[in-house]
Image (cartoon, rainbow, N blue to C red; front, side):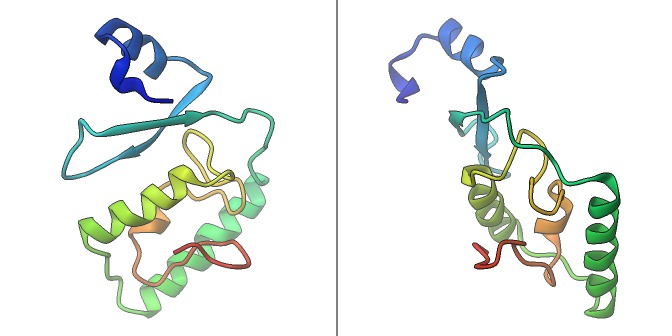
Length: 116
């Protein structure tokens, strides 16, 4: 969908629609937004699985020095996540992460063939 042809009101309506998801917002260019259809039927992992995943990632991150990736790398990772079919508006539907994991140098995409 090319939103460049839309007027300002159409874009506002589309961005606020539950049927579309902003898939990329750059830290360096916050006004840069790309949309994709939002798939509503996929559920997040259970709370227990999300807590286990977050704990494991945090422990590994601490063991490896508690370092964060650069803003450019974070943007790259988030762009990949936002374009992934397993990302909903706020979380990964595979591991349940919500942007914190993408900032950790020690973490990787939870898919069998990691995308980042």
